[in-house]
Image 1 (cartoon, rainbow over the protein chains, first blue to last red):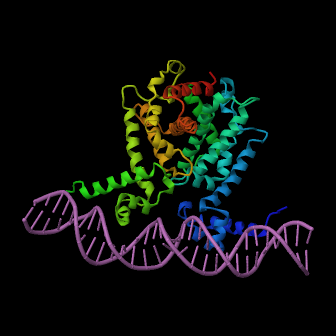
Image 2: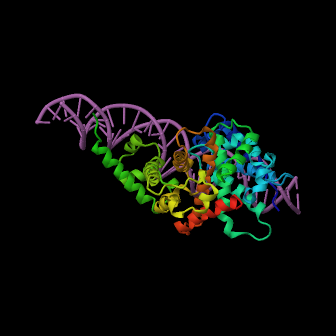
Image 3: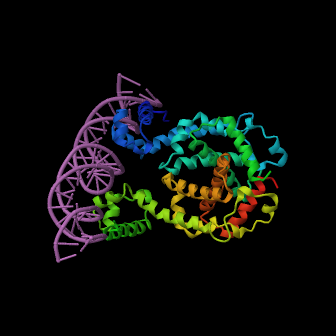
Length: 192
Length: 192
DNA sequence: ACTGTTATTGTACAACTGTATAATAACATA
DNA sequence: TATGTTATTATACAGTTGTACAATAACAGT
């Protein structure tokens, strides 16, 4: 049986730290493999033994962020099931039940990269799929409803739309204000 | 005064044709500058005189697609102002008033690239901004409503969410069915 | 401590990148 | 047609990429 190799742990840690350091004053897209390896003091061949491109390392970072996102949904106050909102539910919507904005604010540095221009759409879709699958879990009581797939994608991307606007506004609004924006938006779009 | 230089016209045309040809059996991300220049029979230095990377050429393509999108809104039957939908309007929504799905279907080949994984987010945001600005024109009668910026981004990205789902479903649904999905989605999300 | 496994290193290679320069040819305008 | 402008070419260069290979060192398990 194979346990985790200490060499790999050490190498990856060096790469993580190097990337984190380089990201402080350089865009992800501009970081070269050679540069990263130089900073991490590892052989370039070693990098290609584990990854294909610099973005793959960031992807590993983001995978952990996604885990946190998914765990946010498991908390007592669950994610808002906007899909199932009825008139009454909407009126009584407690902004505190929405966890997504907390999460984004918590990992603000990451989302500044993910939502920036000229970055791979891979991360966007990772984010999209994470939110979408949670929407589905929230709403499917029992059987999977194939007919609602468009509804899921509609609502998922709508929320991300709010987050894009938040990002473009340099995340100035507080989490609570963002929750209120969500409620307000639902009101406006439904003409109430 | 400078008129358009024929040399530039000829060079760009060669690049356009080369990229179009290469895109038939290669992903945008995998196309090298050298490869493109070889195919276009132009010097690599000439390419860098006009562009910085292969994606810039595709960006020029897409800019024309965006123009068509904007023109779609100017047609007699305008784009749906989902923002302003009232109960009555929703009930009477004529799917034919929605032009966006026609547009996407028309440029299906482009949107297959733009919405694919591991592509620059630049194109996504070009698409996003085009739709969003049209939403704003539709709804602002007179003064610009700063407070509605989140609503605009919410609705814009929601529509794109439907298109993402459409793309993932290999654009199988007809345009009319997509219009119905939009109506249905608005019904479900508003709990009617 | 021994042994088989494998991650890491150093090296090499062809191809690509981005930039720079000088010479040339194609261009617009008058 | 002549002239000034500039897009294009050819060439060069240092650095990067992706891959391959053999040698080595670090590792896990017994």
